[in-house]
Amino acid sequence: MGVPSLFSASILTLGLALFGLVLLLPPLRALCFALRLLPLPGEGPSRKQQEAGSFKLDVYAQGEKEGVVAKAHVHSGTAGDPGYKATALMSMECALALALQRDACAAEGGVLTTATALGEVLVARLNKAGMDIGIDAA
Image 1: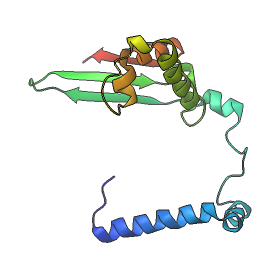
Image 2: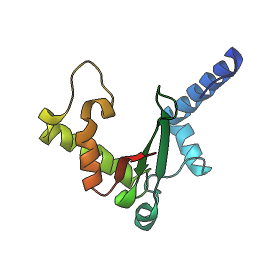
Image 3: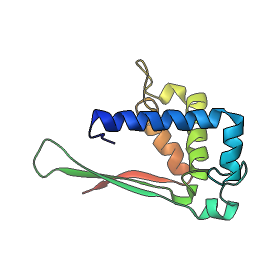
Image 4: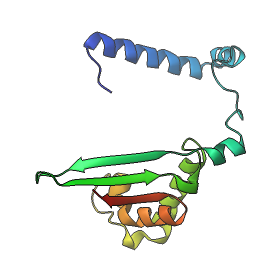
């Protein structure tokens, strides 16, 4: 997300700081709950909504050679809602990959992203768990 000016960045930062302050102070947080500005604890989507939710992501990339294009896809498959069920599934598969298949992970270096550290091990685990992740011929 780009910010067009220093003024815009300052206003955005101030707004985020004020929102954080509201969440930290119990009387203001209670007021937000009472005014229905924030959901009450436990007011997430129903199990049916979590099961019915899905997401689909297609990424197209062009390499250095002219005309060479690759398409990668990530589809939630049976993983469900990306805000709840699929997030939990992906988090657990990351933890299991580290716990059970650490030797197969390419975790060398300092601070790594999930894709860099777990790579194909995680892709295989997520596909086996019901997601659909892969690279298509373009």
